[in-house]
Image (cartoon, rainbow, N blue to C red; front, top):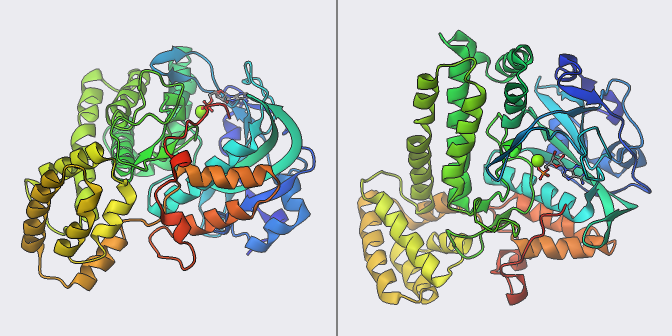
Length: 487
Ligand code: AMP
Ligand code: MG
């Protein structure tokens, strides 16, 4: 374990120079205080959880202090937002403080969000509010615990700094960790500004640091693009299988590593609803739950366009063609597991689709359904679940197919089945209303609920005594909460 001042920096991105980022110092928050820290994320930096409680921790991550080796930089990028190209975006309120490597030799970007104005702030104030910082923190760590690749969050630091959104709120900072903060939009920026030399530098940087195995391939850039396609297909399959709605899949929010990145008005589904739109400014439903699948491909095509100086259009098209089949295979595999199946049959896709249709029509809770399905033998579980469905006859018909399918699947005890299913079907997810409760308490100065919720979400598959209230459907007020996209 290390003390806070013993972090070892190696700022590889900063070394790319001023064409890629600008030196900016964080603007400190008034009266910084720890809201919540993630023990697991701290361990990634070899930090003992206890240091989070020391004043210097809040000073460092509240923008008051910096390590001598940190080189805070605002990165420049651009991107397609809601389908239209915005020529210049960039870190308008976040700073890459530097890259730290841990004892295992892993590099982690330390990115401080809400750190004040930068040359890329446009009309913004460079700040982030407590509400959105808590949401990003909880979601990053919850997704990770579910096995869904995501940027991580080390801590949230609160303050007394006033920040204006729809009303006056308080400023906060979240310290985000990722192996890279490079987005599709980085490549788009250098492509559309016609800076081929920098684009090569960027591609070489990503290839060397994040896809070194592609060097061995006859066309390393193409191999790297294929990997990015694969990782995104897998990521989005996981979102769909677990009911995660990102909300703002603009290409500047898509990571080159295929991790969940840049949280805004995201949501986990309560009731299953394929058409769910979590971002209330998304009037067209461009980023609705089911649209995430084709939008994933659209975003990859935008990246492909930016790579046309290096890779032939035919090769790019062929690589893009991998996306849907990979997505489908991965998604079906996950859904089979969620249903407790260990083998594959051709009709499994129909089994999944017909179940989702029934759930959609009856507004069945997406998370609890699968959890309960594993609680007892297939026959008993479906008998118990049937009351949740308006179309009981339809559900009975599905249940007959399911029971027969389970019977053909293999010879295992109910105990084995339950264990296997509970290991992939969470009991606790970050429901919007749970986040909302924790935020309301935190805004009133009580951080205990954020901390408790975070602890519960770190072990989503494990039943935790005394935590039943976190495994319930939302109360009426907490259903279909509109999440403001201001943050
Ligand atoms: P986002 O929707 O959070 O992905 O942000 C899109 C762009 O707006 C990025 O360039 C952000 O850095 C920038 N941005 C968002 N909020 C602010 C803010 N309050 N101040 C400055 N820039 C911001
Ligand atoms: Mg963004």
